[in-house]
Image 1 (tube, rainbow, N blue to C red):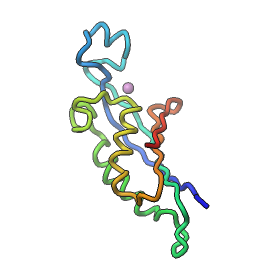
Image 2: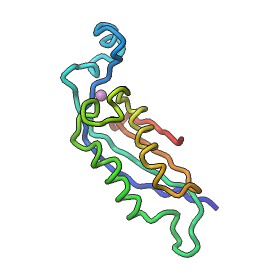
Image 3: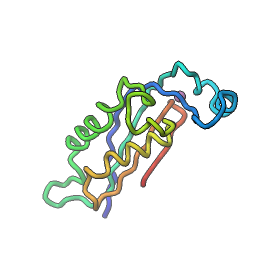
Length: 135
Ligand code: NI
């Protein structure tokens, strides 16, 4: 019997979407306002879900306090109020789209969560645009 438990979190960050191998014109055509060289910000909402068996001793799939602290350490402290392109090593060469941010978050969390459990990351870049990565 598997149960999915989820924790919501939030961070604000700036980014610019572009491909350094393309001309400004091509970047502008593909990424539009998101190619603004002066960057722009988003209020990201994050939902991290962990799916697994209920531990018969605790009744938990995962202690939510542990998950909360893990998201705080690995995601919020690394990304909140940062310029993703300039301040976060993972995006030095990787375009910080919602897709890539979700994959980076999943990769940062995976080593810290019981390997018997599955992880899903849902990242909202706007209230209407969100991406999902499950590994
Ligand atoms: Ni953007």
